[in-house]
Image 1 (cartoon, one colour):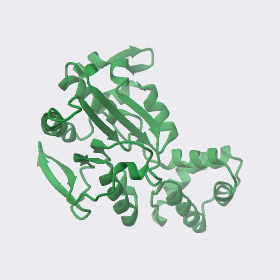
Image 2: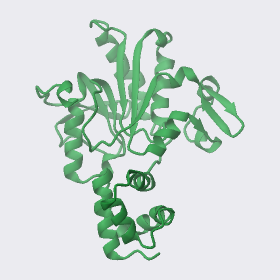
Image 3: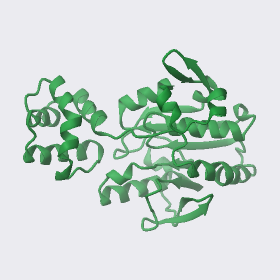
Length: 284
């Protein structure tokens, strides 16, 4: 099956429409390597045929297969370390102090907006359990979303291989929050129950969720166009509580998108500079 320059153009447009990932002509190898099996399993003889089936036929399963194949699910537990340090030693303690004076002193809402196969929200859940001994008496929810149905399904299972566990998991936390299985490790229920996993395309209208005290949207918008990236972070600002914070990837900066950078523990986190009058409820 040969990938032509025209195939690259039309499939790149399709991928952009489906999930916002921008592919240029240099990404032909990625299209070919990740979509060849999808094309073959759909009985397509060419990439052009794959495009037409996905674009013009009412085939949600095929479009989902393309998104699952093309999206990058590269992740690990406690990825980059410093964001979890700043959450543990600055952001969450500040939120707890602020909420102590509110009508809901034990309520905290988190959103892992591109959770991939679950390592980020599970790392957050373990951090909260380490910080708050009576966490079960709190009203704490972590909403974890991803565009890939396959990634969300794996995250919901909470089962990881030895290789996946070795990527970032601390031994003391492994012994405390995981159960050994025949083919790897399984997250315990006391961690799993803090998290609500669901599929969500960040380019589509957000469901009735939030407002959030903390949003993690790390290493996903780097694949979007500049316009799509700007719109995403404008919409995320609307999903934050008035004193809520947003964490992005180490290579990302939001200083030109209406956010104020704050620094602690070698990490940068953000708050919107200007809050509009539009409420989260208006976005539901």
